[in-house]
Amino acid sequence: MKPLCLDLEDTAHAVSLSATGVRRLVREGRFPKPRQLSGRRVGWLVRELEEWMEARPVSDLLPPPSGKD
Image 1 (cartoon, helix red, strand yellow):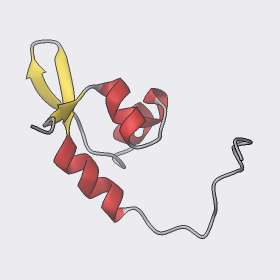
Image 2 (image 1 turned 180 degrees about the horizontal axis):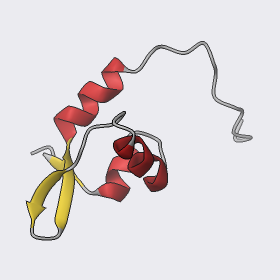
Image 3 (image 1 turned 45 degrees about the horizontal axis):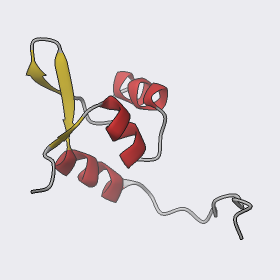
Image 4 (image 1 turned 90 degrees about the horizontal axis):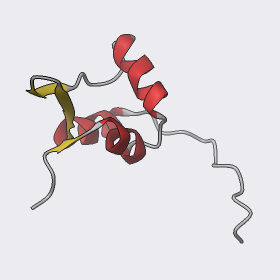
């Protein structure tokens, strides 16, 4: 079964951002808000992260070379 929710670190990794970047985008209203899982625990719905990624604009920029060639 595929996970339904991801914590902050896994969310950041899944969308190729830092945890700080995820927090900033949430504050700015440009990223899905986390869901309350328990008293002090939150998580992001994988479905909402996938929808957010699909809505990102296509870019002509290529990633920088990794030096692993």
